[in-house]
Length: 225
Image (cartoon, rainbow, N blue to C red; front, side):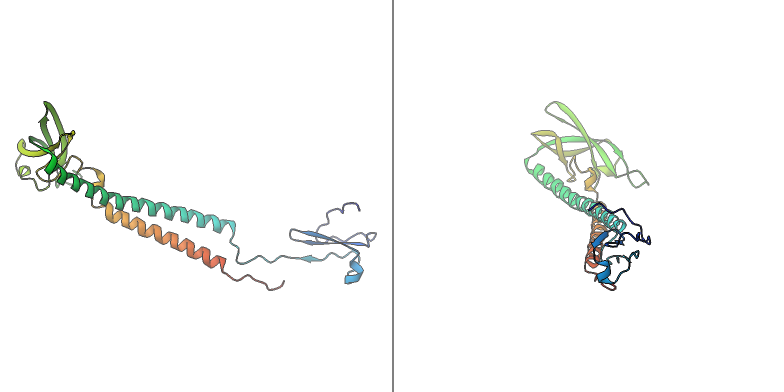
């Protein structure tokens, strides 16, 4: 049988075609042969039927928005977790290194040569520059000035440090501050910021999961089928 031409909705069939009826829906066309008289349809009539949208299926815009929210929540969660855990872990490592150098390090005299920062706004952490000699080589670095008696006077001042013999640039001063104590992860403010990011990111992920579950279990509309 020759292929039937496409018939638009509302178009009447030609009177010569009495053995074929085309039923057009929103997206499908059914070709039923010889059923017109048996079903009571007269030649030239076209029966249309609309598909009802499934209420439980999310639109592409909703799915895209949900994925974007999930990615943002996951990113905030991971960044916050990294900040909080990284800061606590680094502080623990720095404290352990200070204890180790007190026992295994070589005690050498040092000079507090300069001081910067302090209580002024935007000046940063109160810190000192330490110079010392080890094995005939001069080294220097900045450390926090916390709990150091020499900080009460203007430089230069003498202080004692313990140097790692395997790494002469690694030391701990008499105030238990190491050459790594000014690393950004030593800041206590990173811990609450990281926890806040974890909470916000976790809530975003929970909301996305809850919305997806409610959308999946929403009853399908069978009315009119």
